[in-house]
Structure formats: structure tokens, C-alpha cells
Image 1 (tube, chains in turn orange, cyan):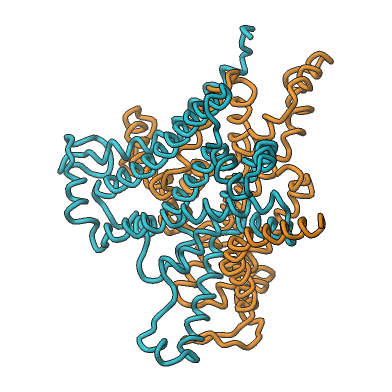
Image 2 (cartoon, helix red, strand yellow):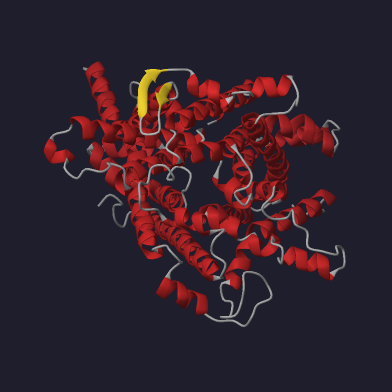
Amino acid sequence: MAAGAISEKRRSALAQASPLALIFVVFFIVPLLLTAIVSLWNYNEYEILPDITARNYVEAFEGCGTRLFSPPHELCATLKTYLTTLRISLTVWFVTLVLGFAVAYFLAFHVRSLTIQIVLFLVCTIPFWTSNVIRMISWIPLLGRNGLVNQTLLGLHLVSEPVEWLLFSDFAVVLAFVHLYTLFMIVPIFNSMMRIDRSILEAATDAGASGWQRLTNVIIPLTKPGIVIGSIFVLTIVMGDFVTVGVMGGQQIASVGKMINTQMGALQFPPAAAHAVILLLTVLAIIWGLTRLVDVRKEL
Amino acid sequence: MGERRPAAFYWLGALFALFVLFLYGPMLTIVVLSFQGPEGGLTFPMNGASLHWFAKLWSDGLPNVDIWSSFGRSARLGIVVMLLTVVLSLMAGLAYRKGFVGSNALFYVVVASLIMPSIVVSLGIGLEFRILDDAIKKHGPAALTDGYDTAMGLFTSALGAHLTWTLPFGLLIIFAIFNRFDPRYEEAARDLGASPWQALRHVVLPIIGPSVVGVGLFGFTLSWDEIARTSQTIGYRNTLPLELQGQTTTVTTPVIYALGTLTTAVSLAVIALALAGILLLRRYQARIGSAAAKGSKSALA
């Protein structure tokens, strides 16, 4: 009878979870499978043709080998796009990691009252709940040609004419990413730091560790799960982004996400799907590498 | 307590202050600039102060765009996404407490959806609906295919796309809530003869209520400014953030700042409502809790 009750309980649990599971089957798993399948389909100007071909993958990198290995020895557009995306992602990752770690460290170890901790944490979080596009647009009056930064620089006679690379540039893109997504680093790192038993830190100090040694030998190793989770968040968001790169790059900078979006707009679904698969594999490889460092599952 | 602060405290404190300025400064600029006078431009200096651009936004909207329709669409979608996120993740959270077949697999799928590049999800759902449309047009009964265009829309593909983004947040927050929930309250209620539903309704929900409001907050705000997953799944009629994104390079008057101030005000109002709701529920809990402790009346009544 007990066994019956238990299986009854588990059946009702399955029923309770099924609406959520159904959403993910219909809007996540099936779409991903379709993307993988369609990346192997052919197409013409009018429609998608369901016959298997490697055409989309081959054409994605067509001519890249010859351009690279024989004159003029340069990268083809596709490879350049992938490298730009990777370069921006790594830059953003590094900046958000250092900044996010410092902010989390301050909140976790230097703010002593729990109330103030919660208030300051909320202060960091509130912008996350407001519109990303607005937060991007809000840089325009600051960084534009006649923006506040240029007005100030000109006023101080630090430059003789307006600095052009502040807006619609790599710099602007990275700045906006840092602005938008540092929180994704702060939250998991802060969470890891709050779990560190404070007596371990005291023990380290009592054993003669300097502040720096305490940081590198105790806090950073114990914060690693938070760092890895934050890194996964930031890297996956930035790798697939097309909105921030579009708006802050003045639609002039190519990224993988933007390339896919443009192809979708031109109704070239199979090549878009092929790039989506390549992007996905790249992201999975990065995540796989990061999770080698720590067992994320244990930390959730 | 009371010991002298190390130098690092001041350095990090200054860094934190700069970070907060970095977070809020730009937003403040466009709020200020949205009150430009009629002659004012996109940058400082302020050319007088007025509500001109709000009035213009109210009467004309943005050039070439029906901004108020997309405003309405975003609001409706946001509310539906919020309700579904709360209900579905709460149900699933309760299921995880009991355990079920495939719970591990579902967990991995949910986390995968959270970290999946949004453009890939968007593309996949877009493809799915395109293939569905083609199939219906080719093989569907005449009654259905007559005048049929697409199944894509605000409350089909776009709703699904938004849920793939909000539900992972919802479920992970619910997990965190139940991690801190003491199951003995529920067991006590069951021992006193409460049905599972009564225990949920009168014991579990009142205790976790404030945190569930937080799930709703995530549901609405994440949907309200979602772009990436919406882009290929919305069909013909855009949501507000998509329109805004399209207008960033074409609108050259402070009217876009007025719109920015307005949508930010909506976000802030929702956040304030949620925080107020959480505080009210907490206070209510404290009152009920202390009343029950005094034995003056049963909390379960």
C-alpha cells in the first residue's frame, strides 16, 4: 500500500510538471531539432527543399581556405565575423569578471549589515529589470559626436576635435555589454561568497595569511563555482547577441548572431540554421571547457 | 564590530559608487533630456524644459510606427507571460519536491534553455511555425486554409519564445524558495487532517507568497523588454522593444527619450508594485504569525 501511495504521489507530481515540460518540448526541443535538420536541407529563392545536403556548411566557409593559405593570405568574411564575435565576447567576459568580482567582494565582505547588503544588492539589480534597449540608447547623449564626454574633453582642451570612436564602435559595444550584463557575474559570485564560512577566513588570517593570500588561496578557489556560472551566462549571451552589437555598433559591426538574423530576414533559413548549429557547438565547447573546472550541478 | 576599516574598504567602496553611477547615470541623462524644450536636440545642453516631447509622443507617436499598439501588445503579452510563469513554475516546483520520472532530464532542459543563445531559440521557433504553416496550407482542410496566413503571433510563437526565457528564471527561483522552506509546517497541516490542496492553499502559499511575487516580477519585466527571442517569432506586428530597437538610428528628436522615460517608468512602477507587494505580504505574515502564536485565533481558520 505504501508503494502504491508513493507511485500515486509521483504520478501526480508528473502531472504537475507536465505543463512546464510541454512548453519546453514545443518551444525549445522541437525547434532545436528542426534547426539541426533544416541546416542540412537545400533551398531556392522560393522555398526550403527537404533533401539532405552539406551545401549550407560548405557555402558558409566557401573560399576561406584558399584566401587564407594562398595570396592574399587573409580571413574570409565568415571567419572574420566569428573572430570578431569571439574577441568581443572574451573582452566582455574579462571586464565583467573583474568588475563583477570586485563588486561582489565589496558587498559580501566589506558591507557588514545585512539590511545595507540587501539594499545595495537591490540597487545593482533594479536596472536589470528595466529595458535593455533604453539602457543602450541612453549612451547616445553621452558618447555621441556632440555628447557629454566629447563636450567635456573639448572644454578641457584635451582633444582638438570630437573623438569619433566613442559611439558606434567596438568600444561602445563592449561598454554596453558590461553595462547590461555585469549583474550576471555579480549574482552568482556574490552567492558563492556568502556561502563561505567566515571562520575559514579567520583561520587563514590566524595562520598568518596576508589579505592578498587570503584572497588568492581561500576566497577565489571557494568562489570558483560562482565565477564559472557567471562566465557561462555572460559568454553565451554575448556570443549569440545581435541586438547590442547592432544598436551600439551602428549596424556596422558583424557578429554571428547578426549574420543569422540577417539571413533569417532574407528568408534564407537553411544557411541561417547552419550558422546557428556552428554557433551552438562553439558555445557548448566553451561551456564544456568551463564545467571541467567545477561541477556546476552541485552548486545549484 | 567597530574595528577600523582597512584601506581596501575605501577603494572598493569608491569602485562600487562608480559602478552605481555607471549603472544609473546614462539612464538619468535620457530622463533629463526627455524634458527638453521644443527646440532641444538629442544632446546637452538643455534648451529650456517642457513636456513637449511627451505631448508629441502622445499625439503623434513615432514616425512610421504605431507605437501605442505595440505598447499595448507588449503589456498584454507581459501580463500573460507573468501569470503563466508564476503558475507553471510553481506547479513544477511542487512536483520537484515529490520527485517524478524524468525530473533530472527536465532540469537539464530548463538550464539549457536559459543559456542557449537567444537567436538560436528564435530561429528554431520561427522555422517550426514556418514548416507548420506550409503543412497546413498544403494539406489542411479547405475550411482552415481559406484565407490562412500564419499561425505565428503574439499569443502563439511569441508567447512560447518568451516562456523559454522566463520559465528557467521562475523555476530556479522556486527551487531557491523551497530550499529554505521548512517542510514541517506542511507535514503538521497534513497531520491535522488538511488535504494536500488545503495544506498548499492555507500553509505553503501564505509562507512562500512574498517570494512568488518575485517570480512574477521576473516574468513581466523579462518579457517587457525581450527582443532576441521575439525577433523571429512575432510575425508581422512588433512588440514595443522591437520597435524601439528599429528606431534607434532613425529617430532624431528627443521623442525617443520621452518613450524611453515612459517605458522605464512602467518598469519601475512594476518593480515598486512587486516590492510593495512583498513587504505587505511579509507584514501580513508577521501579523497572522504572532496572532497564531498567542493562540487568539488559528492561522488556519
